[in-house]
Image (cartoon, rainbow over all chains, first blue to last red; front, side):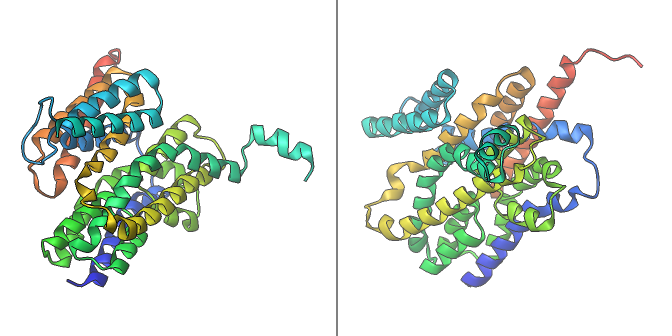
Length: 106
Length: 247
């Protein structure tokens, strides 16, 4: 394992991806349709990360039972977020529910 | 500078520095969510086979949370470095969408701004900045807001990696505490404000269902598939809602 190559390689591909669209932005105008589509990027990417990590915490099968602390914590966070509209409260509250549920059940 | 200069014009055009502070301040909740994540990365790095310097260098030069975690897993499994670099590429593909979304807002900036802002483009900073740019597209010092969020995230990530590498080693089995819930819970808090209309809800539901079904797809490519299906669903539902325009 060559750590130097590994880190340099990861750094380069990550930067190239992040910079790609900045680099071409000055050369062409984004179409209205593309701009409209990009509005959906933040919530869809996030949901695609959230759902498997909450419903499949082990990574293999879907766990919809009440013993799944990730699911219970997520439901609590959704409720808190919906009612309070406060991001920090949602994160801290959801985390607290998750950790205490895990402690109670586990 | 006179007193009047400090008070009045700042209300009309915020100064670069106040924008910088606003960016850092608005990122605070997301920083809280990223802290456990960074500490766990540092904690696991040594036992996965990275050196102390390697772990710090990865956080400093790559600066991509999920890719770094996946790299740890692959290093521990003895994977060859080109495969890990390729996996990093795939895992980070979602950043192309972030880059495209923010591109119209940074296109007027010189390269000296664009390059560092791109380097610091994480999930968290993207979310905070895209919200601001949507609400105040014409603010003159938007890049300072971005910089404030980015630097705060970056410094926090370095500090947390260091804490994991040092203090984290003393905690018994810290990784098993389930602090990996910090990321999904942060993202839940970020998604909720978007759920204001039917196309957005449809997009999110579709993305969630596809992400679950596509979970077995290797290299986290299910994430990209789910996102694209979600975007398409949102666009279609939006189209239905529009009144028919006759030629």
